[in-house]
Length: 302
Image (tube, helix red, strand yellow):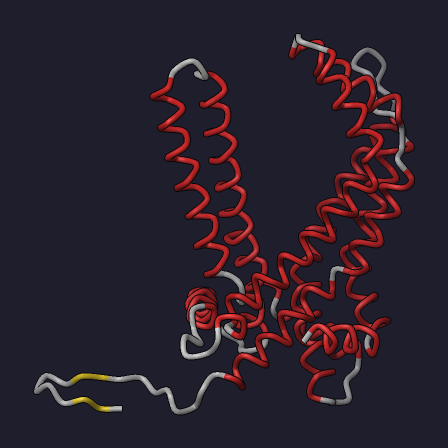
């Protein structure tokens, strides 16, 4: 499956790059504008700085707006390459735009729930730190943290395939979530490593490891500096001030910016892999397994 993913990415590299640039270029413009234009001071407002800040904000919004088109485009383009169909990039783009309302609504829901779950986890950690001397509060915080991890994992499983069902199967909002949960929890008669859930989790784990490696590689020097300050400074307020000053002094991190661009260029591999897994899982699910319905008289109908 991974070999097929790289093969599809190689075949349609320039087409995937076009869809990546739809969301990447506005983000690049926003980052470069923010980095090279000084923020306006309260006492001395600079018109150029204000315009630059407004332009950076608009580019950031445009990047978010283009994100659903990027998601839908990756799904459609991958499916066309897998099926060996001849396609036009303009046609694929028009099809992707048609899915914008549905994909945007699902993005808001899915990413919003993940954000709230992360905030919940941070709130639990803050509660534990605030009352570290109380054993009862620490135990309650640990219980809540276990609940948060369970909720995060359960929701992650339920939305593994929402993009594929929303675009490739043209399912509605609720139907996409329901079908995604059904596919993720299917294949119980298959070996565990062949089930859609575990293969999807494996793909996501590989990508998270790649992102973590890129992030650590880009910010390694800054992280070392933060760690040294953490070991030598006891006052939290002074530590925060030192970190802020160090970040301002470092300026624009070219290596982090370049590695971030590389990460975004490679990001279609995740979407391709999940489309391949989705199509493969739909074919591999045993056809002899049929839903069982029990009538009022107790008869079993297949």
